[in-house]
Amino acid sequence: MEAHFVRSLRIATAATILIILAVVTVFPAYADSWIGDSLELTVADADLVVRGTLETSQLTPGMPERLGILRVKDTLKGNAGETVECLIPDDDERNVDNWQRGKTELLVCLVRSERYHVIGSKEPMAAEWSVRRGWGGETGIIPLDGNPGRRAPTADFVLLTKPDDILKCAAQAIDADAKTKIAREPDGSTPSLELGVPFHSPLEEDLHNILDGNNLVVPINEMIEAKAKQWIKADNAELRHNGFRFLAQFKSEDNIAALKGLLTDPEAQHRAQGANKPGEWRVIYGSIFIGLLVISVLAYLAIGKMGKGISNSKRI
Image (cartoon, rainbow, N blue to C red; front, side):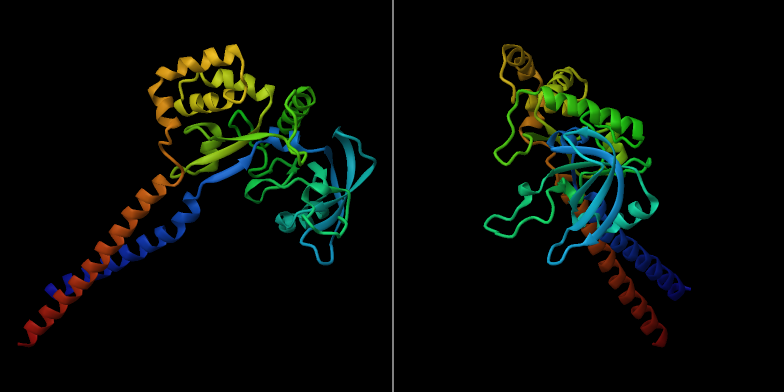
């Protein structure tokens, strides 16, 4: 009876070890922090934005990018003809065939290829235009089929999926970029700022990532400044902190007065001092899992010795 109990206990402990190992294996991928460009930045940073379909794509010798031809239905920013030849980053390698075969309607944000020209290289770029490259392997191609994945997060911390919503946000971002007084960077890119995704925001909930920090990169312009003035009045401390950091980019008497009000906000100060940095929760939970794993292994070995002791006693 005792031997049967020990055997059952050892099996249960072994199962616990396997469960913990499975969680520890999956956990890093689940808990890694996410960083992405907002739709406003993706569009503002582009030199050319078109709506259309991918007509052809082919590998380019000696280059990781594909050479594609877009059939243009509408030009939202810049000037384009009926087709646009462009370089497509290898990050979209797994998508181009489906987009082409399915004639998926796409919103495509392009930059002049010189921006990505390797310094010192004398080789000419294979095309005048390149699809914009973003954070986290995302590119400036946004499918308008209701399934854009994580390609259309907005500065309102919402992940857009409906084509009409994406196009409306893109149009607003293009208009804001045309009116901004903020100069571009020397390489032609749009100045930007990385903000934390507020806890319990729609975007944070859509990312399904509760154990680590998420960050969204937004353009520095007057449209986001107007949003930041509302953020500093929010109940959410993370949103107030984002407003504080963004308004610090715009020096004006109104903004200085608004920021002074946050000097008495202990939660915003706590965030400003680096509390809840990305990775803290991953370290805490990772330590807990490792501790449980060690305890379970020790218990498994101890139960094994107990079983041997019972067997030996029976022989005696």
